[in-house]
Image (cartoon, rainbow, N blue to C red; front, top):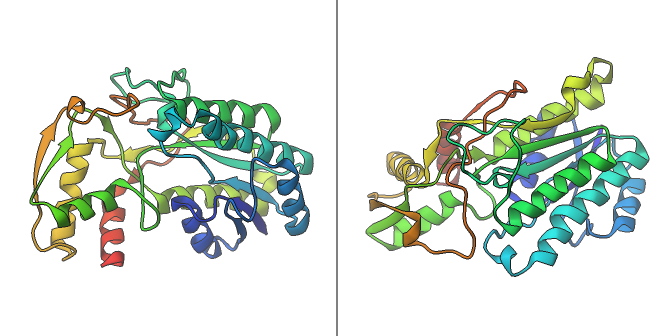
Length: 291
C-alpha cells in the first residue's frame, strides 16, 4: 500500500505524510535532497527500492516573483521534474497524482475557472506549471492533475503566517483588495489526493475513465486577499492567538508593485464533481493547533 511522495517537506507533502494512516496507506517521502526529481535515474532508483503503488508529486518551485529571474530553475522543477515522475509512473504502470495551480490562468475571466477553460499563464511560474501539466499528461495515461489555489496550512510559508507575523509587528496593515480567489487548506488537498490514491490502490476494479485527468479543487467562499486577511485576524483574536487585531486597509494592486502580474481572478470551479472545501473551519483548526 506504498505511496512514493515527492516534495515531502512542503505544505501539502507534510500533511500527506501525517494523514496517510487514516486511509490505511504508507508513504515513503522524499525532499529534494533525498530524491532530486530533475534527475530521472534518482527517481528510478527510489521507485525500485520502495516499489510504490502510486506516485504523488507535491514538489514544486513556488517563488512566484523570483521565477521571473530564475526561469530555468522553475522549469527544471515544475516541468522537467514532473515529466520525470510521469515517465517513471508509466514505466512501472502505476498512477501519478500531480498538484498544479490556479496561476495557469490569466485571471481575466469574470466567473469561476473550470477544467475546460483554456490556460493562459501570465507569469514564468504559471508557464512552468502549465508546461508540467502537459508533460505529465503526455507521458502517463494513469494521471490525475489537481489544480489548487491560495494554499495555507500549519507548515511552510503562506499568507496566514505572513499576516500573523505582520499583525504582531504593526498596528495597521494595507492588504490588496482587487485580486479574487479562494484559500485552500493543505489538509484538504492532502485528504483529496489520499482518497484518490486509496481507491486506486485498494479498489482498482472500481476505477473508470472519470477517475483520471484534470480536476479543480474548489474552495468556498471566494474572497479577496483583504477579505482573507480580515478573516484570519477575526479568528485569531477569537481563539486567543492575538490579543488585538490590527486595522486593515484595502488597497489596489498598484500599491505593491511586483515583478510579475498576478491574476485578477483565479477562483476555481469544477465540472468534474470535485467536492468544494469549506476553508474557514480549517483556518480555525490551524490557528487553534498552532496556539
